[in-house]
Structure formats: C-alpha cells, structure tokens
Image (cartoon, rainbow, N blue to C red; front, top):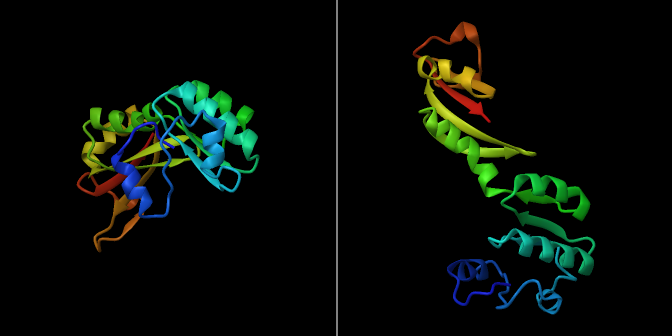
Length: 171
C-alpha cells in the first residue's frame, strides 16, 4: 500500500509477485484488501513514525501472527515499542547510519556494514598502523588480519605488524 502513484520501487517489487494498492495504509479496509489476514510479514516503512506505529497496531489486530518490520526514526521510541506492540524488527535509519558516519569521520576505509541484534557494525579496511590509534577511540568488536598467503584470520598479535592489512569491526 502506498499513497503515491507510480512509485519506482513498486514496479521492482511487482517482479517478485508483490501487489500494489494505492491509498493510506492506516485504513484497515485497505490492509484487508491487501491480504493482511494471509500475510506472513509486513514492511511498514513510511517516513512518518506515527503512521508506521498506527499501521503496526492495525496490522497486529488484523493478523496476530504477522511478522512486523517497522521503520522508526526515534531509536528510543523504537526500543520501547518493540516489546509492547509485538514488533519483530524495528529499524531506525539514523541509528543504523551512526557507525558508518563515525567510521568515516575517523578516516577509516569503510567497506561495509551489518547489524547484529540491536548493534550496527561498520567494517573498515586499512593497515594496522593506521587503524591502531583509532581502535582506542571507537568500540572495536573484532579485528581480522591477512596472513602472508592472503588468508584472513581473527586477530593474531604475533602475526600482525604495522604494515599488515586488517579489517576492524566497530560500532
């Protein structure tokens, strides 16, 4: 359900069998028309927190077993509502982006990101010499080094010199 006509991503989703209905997802009749009763999951990703919360409440009432994945800007609100509304996953875009901005601000070569439960993790690639002082400034969750044969291993101090290529997982 989307209130905009000709949204580019709806054509992409249609390739995977997704149905598109124009309207306001806060309307329980539209949720019914969209098949909420048979749905296994619903993505609620408008740019309005209150709209997303309202849709989540209605979706849960119409289908107690549906998996709810919700976008909320306010991470504190997201944490509080997750258990109370029975939401399976809540993502705050600003919360997810935080470690990426931090890694970039520290001058780290960002190669990717992932999340583990409620923690977003940035992966940075650099020499040990360049990353070593920055690891003290951030929360390092793991360090991987490349050996002389090109294989990546968990950090091994005895095999890591200042010129060693390392990947740091920071939050």
